[in-house]
Each structure stands twice: as C-alpha cells, then as structure tokens.
Amino acid sequence: MIRRPIKQTTTLLLGLASVAVLLLAYTWLSHRQHQENPDDTTIPTWSQLADGVQKACSVDKREGQRWIVVDAKATASRFFLGLGAGVAGAIVLGMLMGCFTPIEAFCYPPLSLLAKVPPTAAMAVFFVLVGTELNMYVAMIAFGVLPTLALTVFLGVKEFPEELQYKAYTLGATSTEVIASIIFRQVLPRLLDGARLMIGPALVYLIAAEMLVGDVGFGYRIRLQSKLLNMGVVYPYLALLAAFGFGMDYALRWLQRKWCPWFEKAQG
Picture 1 (cartoon, rainbow, N blue to C red):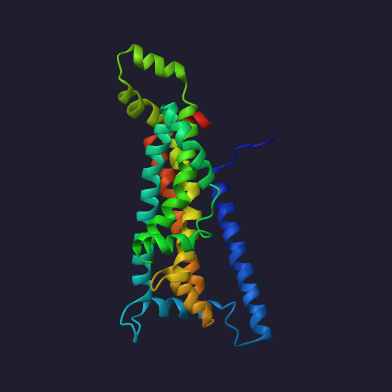
Picture 2 (cartoon, rainbow, N blue to C red; picture 1 turned 90 degrees about the horizontal axis):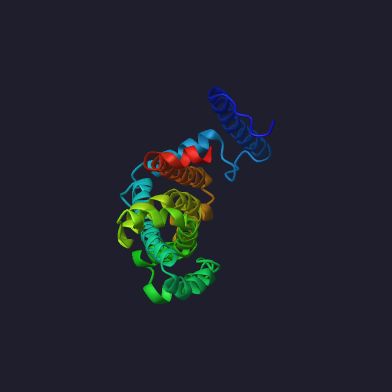
C-alpha cells in the first residue's frame, strides 16, 4: 500500500541506520585510502579528524584566536542578516503583489527575471556596487532569496479563497485587517516552507563569497585549509554547516507547527 504509515520507533531506527551506513562507508573509504598511502590527508581517519577539530577549537598561536569561534560569528551574522533582509522584503513584495493587481503587473516581470539570475554569477556586480565588506554578503544573500520567496508568497496569496475575503468584509473588516489578520495567516505556512528551501541556497551564496573575498568565516577557512590539504579541519567545518542547516530547518518546521497547527492537519 502506498504511503502506509509506520511506527515512530521504526522511523527512528531507520533514520539511525541510514546515518550508520554513511559513517561505515566513510570509515571503509578512509581505511582503503590509507592502505594505499599511510600519509594521505584527503580522506582523514577518525583520529586525524579529531586532531582537526582540536586544531580548530584551540587558540591559534599566530592569530591568538580560536578559528571556530571567529568563523562561526562571522558566517552566522552574515547569514542571518542576509536571510532576514531577504525574507522581510519577500513578505512585503509578495503580499503587495498578491493583494493589489497594479503592483503585480509592475513587479512580477522583473522578479521572475531576477529569480533566474544566479547570485554567484553576479558576484562581480556586488563587489562593484557594495564593496567586499558585510553589506556585500547581506546584499548577495537577500538578492538570492528575495525574488523566489516573494513569488512563493504571491502565489500563496493568489490561492486565498475569495469567499473568505468577502465574508470578512461582510463582518466589517477593513482591507488592512483582511490582509494582516486573515490572508497573511493563510500564507505564513507556505512562507516558512519557502524559507526552509532557501536555507541551502543562501549558505551556498555565502560560502562562495567567503571563499572568494573573505578574510574570516567558514568559506575562507575551508579554502585556506583545503589548499594546505588539512582536510581534518575542512570536513568538520562541512559537518558543522550541515548541522547548522539541519537545525535551521528543524526550527522553521517547529515554528510552523507552533504558529500554524491547522496547516499540518490540513496536509493530512
């Protein structure tokens, strides 16, 4: 039977099994590589990874700082500022486009076009317009997130049943009250889903920019250590990025369940 439900314990066990398979596969690849070359660092052993973690978490003698601390602060601040700006702009534009036809006619064509432009390809434009400091990272992430997310909000508004709108007007609600209290609440679950889908692309834009022009941050450290073949540092950094993205996704799903319990029930 398609989509037959399974027990929660079975779901948990299958998830743990998939992680165990990945870890065992990595262990086997590392062992095979070191059988051929004992000094290999491209696929570090678990002890080499532990040394890399210790190196990243210890105070560097030359810089006098812990790499993991300074890089996490820089990358997190850039990410949250850029994503926050993109989401805020998407909410405003998407709601206005969905609620007012003239704004839709004016904004839809450029947004549809900009949504197809990869921010990494336009990186040189950002360097010229806003330099290579914090504003560049924020602008790049916001540019990458805003068009697609604004169109997601816009389509959510367009799907709002007109019957509910007319009922609200009949009960005496103003246009502002209908937009803020009814339409936005209906669109919010789709907005959160769209933001979840934007976590990965936003991280790609940020890491690519940090690799190219950053002097601190995860992208900068990965580029620097990969040139030195210190993969024992690179792999833990990649694992942290994956864990961060997973945590963000989980947090947004939790907010969706908290703020929009009706949506999950409607999805079945």
